[in-house]
Length: 433
Image (cartoon, rainbow, N blue to C red):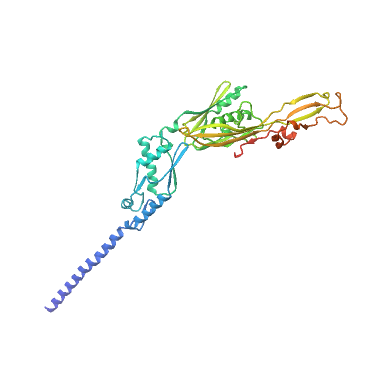
């Protein structure tokens, strides 16, 4: 009987200890498991912030810090045609708590961000008063801006509004046109021009005239014809925002080209004409004949600004006079062997005007110099009657000081060999190949 009581006591004691231990240690285990379950798993990021092994409470200040850093270091640029404006990030609103609460474990998550539509529309109106986006286009712009916010990638972000506009890049407006009046047009010249047209000018690209000639298999074209076409192209693209990368001129201005618009091309001497299209739209050059006139047209999307080309600082330089003596002439007789030609220096300016006609800026496009051509006079020998004078030297050259100007004196005399060679003059800040 006594032993049975002891056994019963032991059973009750063990049961009590089991129940107590289960409830106590079970609660501790559950608490530990619950705490472990609140931590983000490996690979979890929020707006680029690594929150693996962090609780939601620990993750919030990390995300908030990244948002503040992003707002301080991020600049948005909106570009439309030639105009770019900088806008701040105030029209974006972040919700840090929602970003953390909505984060999915084990994967990248974007920050919760919303956009103030009116603020963005206000920025668009600064680009151009006539810029109106359709609802679908505005939504695309919203998403592009929001993506930068979701990823919290700090830095400068440029968004081309022009790319979002439906049909903007498909415009076929004539932006600029040039006509070249030519006296001697051969059938071959007409064929070369027709084979070259149209010349594609992709967005944000450079165009090399020599490479275009090569691509079109027109390398048999004479350098004179190449230079004529290149000069027409140069004159056509000047009243735009196209950049001139490489350009050359000869020693004498061709008759068919106005002063300041020459573009000499010579494949043998690697003299190229290269220009660049800095716009987001594609353009092309159309060349066609209205015999004997060559018409060149730049076609594509209209530009935002107006560009005007003006010449500035034009100067003339008188030629020197070179006197040669000849026994074939009587004393006092003279003949003009070369009438000579004045030299010229001209600077070409590009003036830029805004949408309302307001002057924005001007830039120097080129500074072209054509040296004077010497005047050559042949005089009879002094003291002779048609024969050689003792001690006289035929073809003696002397400069007539009375015909020289201060400018030509600075240039100095040119050796006969150098006078025969054609010198190539280029724009001072242009790149030569």
